[in-house]
Length: 430
Image (cartoon, rainbow, N blue to C red; front, side, top):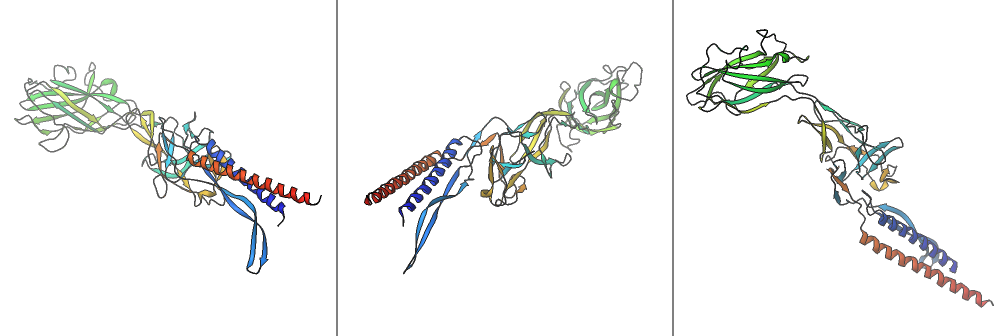
C-alpha cells in the first residue's frame, strides 16, 4: 500500500475530528439556549481497497468520516419564571409556530402576546392552538393562531336570590301593611341587594319586611323608579313594588312557610322584561338548603346574601393549565377558556431539520406531524411559568472535547511520521 494512502487517511481523520470539535463547540455555546437539544457526531469508517488472498479478502481502510450529526431529544430541566406565557413541555411534543415563511416546530416556549393579542415567540411567529366553543367551553379541534385580544366575559341574568335574615321577634306589628309612599314607617327592616338584568346592568333591589302579626311577616321587593318600567302607585313615590309575599315562623323562630316567589322584575335599559327571580329565604319547615331566615329576640340583621347573576367583565389575567387551556380571569369573577395550546409529534423526531432560532421543520425523513392536545395520547403536559433548559451536559462535552483533541493530534502525528518516511525514501535515490 503506498504511503500516500496513509496521508489521505489521516487527513480524513483531521476533517472528522475538526467537525466533531465544531459540534462540541456548538453544544457548549448553546448551554443556556432555551429548548436546545445537544447534538452528537456519529463516525463511520471509509473502505479503501480489498486485497484478495487465500483466506478471502483483506480489507484496508481509508480513514473515517462523519456519517451524521444526531440531536439528543431527552428532556431538559425546567427553569421557573414569573411569566405565565413562558411554557415548557413535560414529555413528548413540539410547539407549532406559523409565519409567512412557513410552519415551524420548537421546544422553546419563550412566548408573549403582541399588540394585536396574538401569542408569539420573539421572532413574531404565531403559536398555534385550538379555538374554543363559547357555549361548551371545550376546544373545537380547529387549529388557528392563538389570539386572546381583550375579550369581555358576557353577563349573566339573575335568576335565583338567596337571602338569610333575622327578624326581631320584639318588633311592633304595623297595621295597614307596606306603603311605597312611606316605606320607612310601614316596614320594620330592609335589606338592599343587587340583581343583574340580561344586559349585565346592576339594579338595587330593596326587600322590605313588615311585621303583620305574631310570628307573621310580609315582605315586598322593590326597585327605584328609575330602574323599572312599572309605573309608581303615586307620582311622589321613589320605589315601585315588583313582588311581595309572606313569612310565617314557629314558636322557636324557625321559618315554617313562605309565599311570593318568584318575583318578576321589570327593569329599564332595554333588558328582557319579566325577569323572574326565585327568592329563597333558606330552609322552610326544615326542607331546603342554605342559611336559614329566623325570628329571634335580637336586632334584625342580614346574615347572608347571594345571587347567580353578574355583570360583563374585562380580562384581568390569564392562567395556562397543564392541558394547554388558556383560561382568562375576568373582573366579574368569572373564568373562561380562551384557547388551547396544540402540540405536534413525529414518527421520527431525528428526521427534523434545524433551521435556527430554536426552530425545526419537517422533512420526508421525519414523517408527517401528528397534532393533538397536551396530556392526550403520547403528548406531554404544558408547564406554565417554566422554560425547558438546554440538555447539554458540560462535563460530557468537555470529555468529548479532550478525546477529539487527542484524536486530532494523533492524526497529525501520523501525517508527520508518513512525511518522514517519504523523506527517507527520497534520500535512498540520492
